[in-house]
Amino acid sequence: MTLTDRDRAVQAAIAQGLVSPGQPVAGFLDIPGIRRSAAELRSAFEEFTAPGAPVLHAFAVKAASLVPVLRLLAQEGLGCEVASPGELALARAAGVPARHTVLDSPAKTLAELREALALGIAVNVDNHEELARIDRMMASAPSTAPIGLRINPQLGGGAIGAMSTATDTSKFGVPLRDAGARDWIVRAFLDRPWLTRLHGHVGSQGMPLERMAEGVRALYELAEEVNEKAGRAQITTLDIGGGLPVNFSSDAVSPTYRDYAAVLRSAVPGLFSGRYGLVTEFGRSLLAKHGTVLARVEYAKWAGGRPIALTHAGAQVATRTVFAPESWPLRVAAYDAAGRPKTGAPVPQDIAGPCCFAGDLVAENRPLPLLESGDHAALLDTGAYYFSTHFAYNSLPRPGVYGYATAPDGSVRFATVRTPQTLEEITAESGGAQANELRRLGLG
Ligand SMILES: Cc1ncc(COP(=O)(O)O)c(C=O)c1O
Image (cartoon, rainbow, N blue to C red; front, side, top):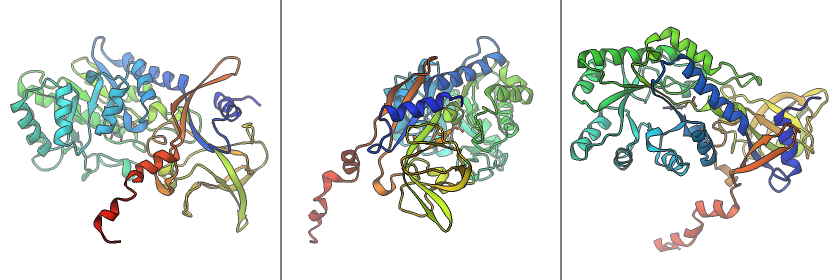
């Protein structure tokens, strides 16, 4: 059997004790794979963009809130799209410069806005009230930070409702098709010479490329209209968001960044003319295929005639998969106690997690070689969001995350990306230092 890099990493992780009876679950990231994806993203846009036109690929930090990963991507020439003070702190800790950082989020506080403007971070304004806040800030402390307005082109949703940001009633951005909205947006630009960007993010997983491109076309046409009415190139930059869907059913990368860039070029030829700088905000598509969650099978049992593997990877790491399995199905690979791919006739079985609720299943009735206690289950394509969407139920710790690189001789080296959360850390974040505080209420 030919082993993949992932198979080798699984075997080495077990041999080196990164996954063990005492640490029964961990995450792994294929570092050369991530670098390849970053290079593919860069070259796809370079191929289509006029020479010299500025393009910033700002990685959506929500997809992997891990400082070493942000630094790796920065070394690959990427910036960060942040959507909270925490994400901004991570980008800064990774050394991502302000000029490569973009702040989105629909509920930025005054303090967040002040900090971003003072640092010179690009801010995408979500709504008219936020714009009024920025007006007051610009009047009292003018900033040269690039400021844009997020538009919802209201084109409809994709296959996953929760990921669809361009529905009529989406909470994000200024709805472009509501009565009077377009005129209001154009006026907003004409009245504010410092408003120089348009931002849109039509949606993520489950969104057809053509609809994403339609959203970008709506942005482009609006920018053209504003610039024509302004009599100058007021809008200099289009931030086209992220959202390239990921194939979760095989190892194939499909669609590719090049596929998307080609669709964009045919739907919005002017986008790459060089008249606009571009910002992208891809998250999932950069990392998903390069991550694996590896969990020990603690017990194997049967119920109602069905085999069940009780593993240590459930809702705490695969939160979306457990709560919305139709939208976020994952491939599972079976490995034996030493991390060798399991062979044997596929048997439909449940792959369950450690959480104390019945629905904590990452795969239901899935045909796989029968898992036994001491074996391992690997959740594939989990490089994006699975290490940043932790669920703290049952006070289960956030697992360690390790980067790996495989040498041509098959040897695997690991580097720690995130240490496993300790029980002391869980106790501390659960009010451990306040154990006596409730006594102050004097009720007992
Ligand atoms: C504003 C914004 N940009 C970028 C992204 C990243 O999307 P994806 O991970 O699908 O590429 C998101 C995610 O929802 C987002 O809300």
